[in-house]
Length: 349
Length: 124
Image 1 (cartoon, rainbow over the protein chains, first blue to last red):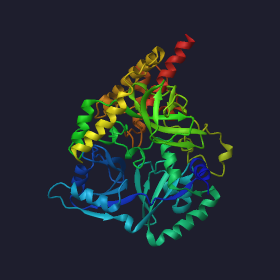
Image 2 (image 1 turned 60 degrees about the vertical axis):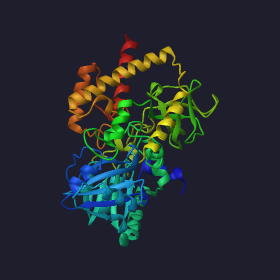
Image 3 (image 1 turned 90 degrees about the vertical axis):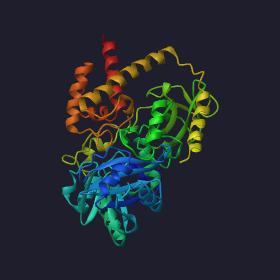
């Protein structure tokens, strides 16, 4: 299947993906809350069955892993990208407060995670597990058919992540594909998910996260706190006191563009590209640049990528670059079958 | 992480910054940026005061997502934010599907406010 078909499914109907690139851990035991509060740089206001996005940081403040942190009673579920399970378990163990005892389980050793994404993913889920899931808000954990499920995702569309015991994965996958046929469901690769994340301004630890940047340049300060102690806290305070000169900025325009290209504004070097892909939906290139803060606000034209003024022309843009259909599809009123009877706003913003 | 690596991070940043020392921004662009910075500053303060965010203005990044897992606002916050913006800026937030795109990020609120003011100025 072509990338374009995968993207079309995510943006217009529903796509199924196997999330083998992520790591799944559970932290449990009497000290789980104290451990999580010490390990993660965010203010840990997390109710039962709620998910928040945070990070794990290096000593110098750079992201070490991108974390979805979910709470189940007094236990914590981690969905992490950027490290292997062994690395992550070691990092968590190293950062436990003195005397705190917890169990750290690699859930991914016994489970596969299947993800459904798209404006009608809720309808496929409803057909799979029942209509009670339809009202689940983004950022929550629920249980159906004995599976733990995250109402989550990084595509800007309705998203669900199902933790399936490995021995059942093939059967559940086949069931979803069969049910999904009437919703024009397609399988989507990590490449498609990454492009959707870029279009929707979700942090990608494998792309911009691999640059030498901190949450200040990455515009991820909402995932951290300056009021608590954790690995990386001092470096972030120092960086904040210095002030940042460049900021991750959304750009769109001509191509081809690739990571590492110098970025010029009216002939002056003002940054470089850290992530770029061709958006088949927009029919232009979408990029993230590390841009001089003086010219990083949305709506500025006159940028060129590469060493010369004749490089691809770019302009700063207000992200996300997609007006997601999921913003307007209401499970109480709409359905995939009757979608052509509804006039939705254009996908391009 | 060693101090050497941190120095390396700084060095890379400084070497790239130096090339932009002579950056000249056109007058009209500077004016637009000044308007943007002013509105951004006011929106940040309004978010913090009205929604009791435990943040300083510089911690609210311009492209921060407002709802769900972003800054964590909910539907009650949306109502309060709408009233506060309309009062502070004298700009109407439409009570329709368009408000979903306006409230996606801090910058999308700022963008709406600037465009609304420009429309009023053009009509006048």
